[in-house]
Amino acid sequence: MKIEDKHILQIAKGEMNVFKSFFNQFYPSLCSFCFQFVKSEDLATDIAQEAMVEFWLNRHTQSSVKQSKVYLYTIARNKSLNNLRKRKMEANYALQKYEDSSEDIINIAYIEDEIYAILSKAISNLPEQSQNIIQLALKDYRNNEIAEELDISINTVKTLKKRAYKKLRELLKDHLVILMFIYCKLFL
Image 1 (cartoon, rainbow, N blue to C red):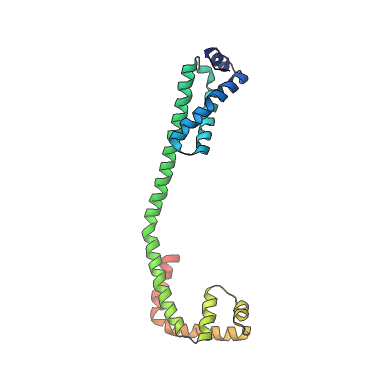
Image 2: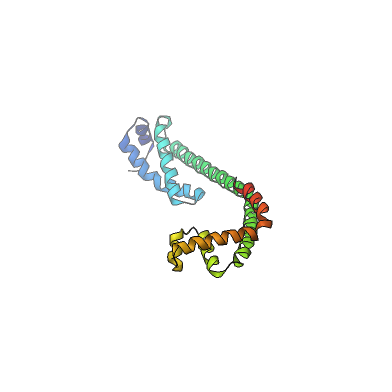
């Protein structure tokens, strides 16, 4: 059925079957219209549906096909533009948040690299077996997992780990205050 002014008056009175015909006639072109703004089929269909719902809720104000089409497309345009503004604001907020924190991220990465270099140099001064144990411990391996990985007893792991930590404290004593300061600044 082609929608005419008499059908709009029936819709205004709440005739749901006539509104279904109105919906079927205008919904596809309304989706295409919304897509021109939002460039997303899913979003365009959502906006077109919202526009149809709003049209139905305000149907009593309609009296002609021309007025109804103008009203419907105006609703769809406004909803599409509001969606674009909202997405732009969200994007700007995310960008601003990223820009505000990007300098901190770079500084933290630089400091972590420096700490890692100092620690790696100190670990390289340990005996080979102790190096392996400390490197696995830094990867959150437990003593029993280290023992299994290196095929040694758990008591050997505990003993070598204890000696390695003692040696690392000696090797890092000049850097300890700096490392603690950096740690406190970054993580506390």
